[in-house]
Structure formats: structure tokens, C-alpha cells
Image (cartoon, rainbow, N blue to C red; front, side, top):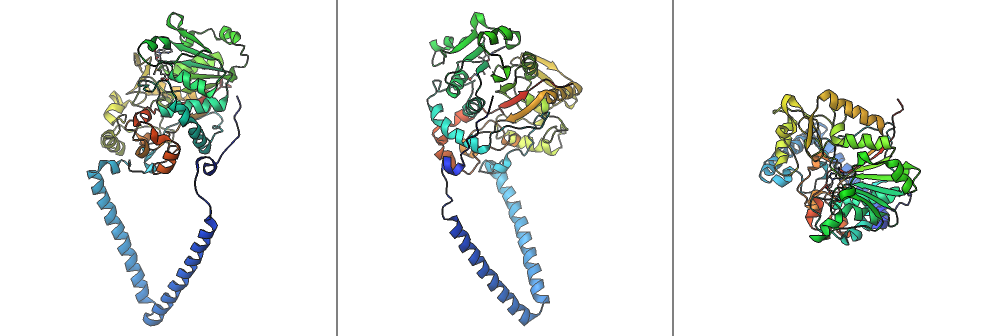
Length: 432
Ligand SMILES: C[S@@+](CC[C@H](N)C(=O)[O-])C[C@H]1O[C@@H](n2cnc3c(N)ncnc32)[C@H](O)[C@@H]1O
């Protein structure tokens, strides 16, 4: 699958200033020169009148006064923060709050990354917002919200597959998103309950160019006879197929099955953070002490424990070390468990096994890319995911103008509540 190369700058695509910047810069420079020559004249006068000692003492004294006032002010702001919890956690527009608890990631074989940039994502958002407004399932509780719908649409459109396969359709929202990205490309949908069943109770989406393996025809991804299915769809090159998993199964199992079948491009909807979720995710697997941002301290007296305890009060999905760590300080997966199949099959694993899993994943990864959240929480008013464990958003906190211009302010805040680090990976068999 090939990437498009069209790129539009934020100024071109989304709007923004820039006109007349040179004149302003020139004015600024001239006034700086004026200020400098005035300061020099004053310094010369003081040196002439009082010698060198007194002016120097005055400068040192002023500097000390400034430093102590800054320390005093920062102490005060900590006091204010404890009263106003929202500024403590940075919800008032500090995008620097993102990633402060570490953002683990999976190393790839070649260190390659994706072709698209933040500018492409911004341009994509501008296009996707009006599309999302026409979604048939307005309330997709238990399914994808805005962030992941956008991510799936954006990546699918970029990758332009010849065939799209989803595992886990629920009422069909993700099928609809795939269809918006690629209007004429066939879809395969593996899901135990046919989306048409939901139509009796309310909105659902059933696609005309989709082969459903559902109801009595349901087959799990791991049991599909891919050779015959691909033949039936005229696909000879498996690298032209996009696989989308939203079936809440152990992602290590899915990765191995996809690899065995020969697929290359995979998207996992719920790439749960360590200590959360109902299945073992790639992010959990790669959360290792040797990865920057990975690893955990289970000591009650650690900085991590203190920070987590505070953050848990403000973000529904944040976990404290009691929840993160199990017996023997086991923190991998969820409290030392490799969860599978909607949390129905939980297997306790050793640290050694968890470590080996990460080494295996790294050995087959060509690309690992986590979708950033669409916008900072001061804009979206999301209350669930903790920004401290996430990469920075596409639209940073404080950029309300951009958020509004993109049309994102028209959505109910509930659509921004489902972010769980959707991830795109490219895989291939390891050479050894
Ligand atoms: C979170 S929902 C999917 C949401 C959907 N993708 C959306 O866009 O809203 C998870 C779905 O996975 C389905 N499921 C459960 N086990 C599965 C399996 N082994 N293979 C495929 N789907 C499965 C469930 O029935 C459910 O429809």
C-alpha cells in the first residue's frame, strides 16, 4: 500500500495568520536597539558617578531578589494547586502535562516510522469532522468514539488497501468508518452477532459491499481459511489488506495469527495502558524497564505512587500503584496477568515471560505508531484517559481557535471519552 504525498500546511488548510510578520519583526528589532543604547547610556552614567563596586552590588542584589520572589511565587502556586485540583493536573491548558508519567512504545526492527505528519492529521481532521457528523450511530457507547474513528478513517485512507478486514463490529460503526475511507473497497467483517440484529432496537450499520462472518457463519480470525477467502476476493498480495482488530482478544495471540497468515498492516483499536483494559495489549507488552517511559515502581513511597494517587482523583482511567501492581510487585499486563478474550481468560505470567513477549513483538515489528489524542482535555473536556500516559494531542491545549475552526467544538464531550492509544503496526517475519 502506498502513501499519498499531498501535504497542506496548517496555514493553508486550517487558517492562521502570518501576513505582515516582517514589518512587525523590523519594528521589534529597532525598538530593541533603542532600548539597548538607552541602557548603555544609563550604565555609563552610574559607573561614572559611583564607580564599579556599587552598581555591581546593586545588580547582584536585584538578581537575588528576583530569584527569591520566583521561588516564593512557585510555592504559592503549589498551595493554590492543592486547592484547585484542575490546575494541579494541568487541565487548564498545559500540554506539557502529556507524557509526564512516561509513554512506553514498541521498538521496531528498523526504527522506521509512518509517513504522515501532524500537518497531515490536521488536514485530515478538517475533512473528517463533517463526515463524522453524518454517522448513522450517534451514540456508540461501548464502541469507538471520535478519536479512534478519526484514526481508523485517516490511516485507511492513507494506506488505500485493496481489502479491509475487521474483527469485532458491534453495531457496525467501524464498518461505516472503513466505508467512508474507501467507498468502493470490499470489507470482511468477523463478528459473533450480525449488526443487522441491532437494527431492531435502534441505529446500526449494515454495509452492502461487506461479507459478514457473523451469527451462524461466525469464524474467529484465528480459524479463517485465509487462502480460500483471499482467492475468493481476488487478492494475491496480502500486503494490500488492512486488518482492524476491535475484538478485545489478547493482542499477542492476534499478532501471531496475523503474522502466520502473512498480513502486514494491522490496527488495534484498544491498545490499553498497563494496569487497564480487558486484554493484553501491545503497549502493555512493550512497557518494559529498558524502554524509555516504560517500567514501574511498585513502592508506596515512590514518586510514581504519589503522582498516580493524585491523578486517579481526576482521570477515571488512571490507576494507582495498588491497582497497577499485583503480588510480588507484578505490574505487567494487568497486575501480572496476560488478559485475553474480554477478560474471560486471564493467565498469570512471570516477568520473564512478559519480557520474552516484548522481545518477540520487537522482532516482528517494522513500524509501531500510536494515534495521538485529537485534542487536549481542556478543549475536549474528556475525563477518562490520563494525559500523563499519552503522547501529545494533535490540537494542543490552549488552541481553542483551531479546535473551533476544525468544527470539533460542535461535538458532545462524550465522543472524546474513548481514547485508548489506538495503534498501527507493520509486521513481517523475523529473519532469524
Ligand atoms: C467493542 S465492540 C466493537 C466496536 C466496533 N468496532 C465499533 O466500531 O463500535 C467488540 C465486538 O467484538 C465482538 N467479538 C467478541 N469476540 C469476538 C471474536 N472472537 N472475534 C470477533 N469479534 C468478537 C463483540 O461481539 C463485539 O461486537
